[in-house]
Length: 308
Ligand SMILES: Nc1nc2c(c(=O)[nH]1)N[C@H]1C(S)=C(S)[C@@H](COP(=O)(O)O)O[C@H]1N2
Ligand SMILES: [Mo]
Image (cartoon, rainbow, N blue to C red; front, side):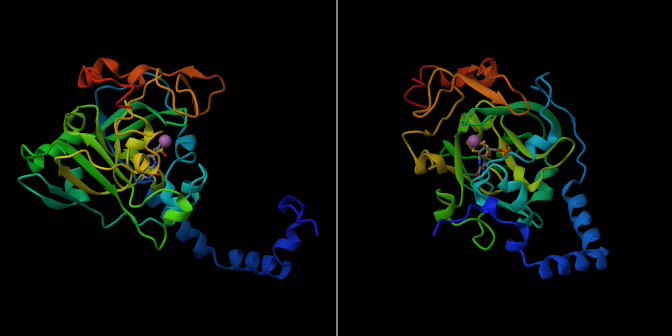
């Protein structure tokens, strides 16, 4: 028997009409349900004020709608449209970040205390995914080095390892996502201390929406997007280069450094150009995503083909 394509199915065959009618009655009879939903949305969009920070590009920010609906956040789905549909399951408060390892002052911080460590800045950064799309986002946060200095790393701290929240109750299984969880990332100590590396709590004048990594994420603008780990719960200072999720998943395609580099192609596609979300024509990808003046010196003497 030929299998019907879903587009051939009429609505009445998918949902029995009685259910459909009941649902309509339910919705109109219980306006409070709608009000509660709106309240949740309003909370997710709480305002976050910030002073203007350094390093902002004068390029036009990508429309908020694109940045909040075209995402990579595999814990909530592997399709770009899925995180914005599923990440409302994430409970972002209370939230703590455990900072540990090679530091004199390890501590489990409440997010609110971290957010008070320095004035919040708005920084408009370019952000480029390894999949050759890019966005321009007015992020809100402060340099990651503020938090690092507060815990006083010891001489053994050569790298920083980051870990995202993972809860199998409402996130994808490793099997369905195709990557290992919890999501982990890492930076060399000098990269993490670089003033461009942002500990980020918001965007477009508001708290981060869950799909963009609420309540706290990294933004490392000279590296491919996957280094910018979302929904961070743990930061550990270590002596050796820590494992990173995409390198674990496919080490030939994704290295530890992952600096944006138009001259080193991904094994399956060119990295020479990119498509800015909301635009039609492709644009050239810039070395270190346009931040070479700031960060190139971190890599002098390194073969960036070998350390991709
Ligand atoms: N925890 C977690 N962090 C993550 C990811 C993820 O799947 N899980 N995806 C990464 C990738 S591949 C990209 S491109 C950026 C996307 O950030 P955005 O959705 O805010 O644009 O988040 C990065 N951080
Ligand atoms: Mo990405």
